[in-house]
Length: 284
Image (cartoon, rainbow, N blue to C red; front, side, top):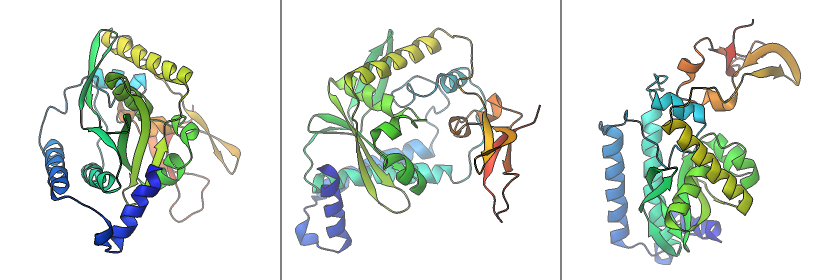
């Protein structure tokens, strides 16, 4: 099992039992070069505004891809967004060392891949291949670690707002390998979770069909259509009469363009000192 091996290595390093863990100097050098490349990407203008379909976005909701393809204005990101991205890059580079120290059978890593989908070349760079199965390394918040990544594959795939399942399947298909799963690091606590991809053959076919449908829709400039509708708001299991955006829309970079009338407001029924806030729509 990969997860216990990772935790054992981290436990020994945390307790300075360096004689029980093998870490080669060149592993550290490789991780350093990987992180430097990530910093260059994050801190310089490298064509970030040039939209193209790629492995990391092709499985996202079609409405998001259409917005991006049309050059729609993105919502302004919070000031700490870039820090979150760089911390994630660091976690990915570090995990490469930990996997080697854990004795994982790494059969490939950081391979540039290409997949022909509906006549379009979809490219990307995978993270790591273990025992000839493709894995993605992710980082996340404590909430996502506990409620998304730690609840099993069935729960995870049903809350896959960022298209991670399609991304993994895309990498695997391009390499002619099986999808292994995800190795996820909590940015705050440093906890690690290995989520195995337990997709059935039928589900894998469905995911690939969805990827093809997205590619065809974007490539043919199909008319924009929202994929999600507002949800009825409730408080303590009682409807309030308000409507607010669903979770997928809340995470979307084009929320302000798609839903210009939405307002980020504290919940009107909450009596807490710091009430939870949601994107509410005006009553009609």
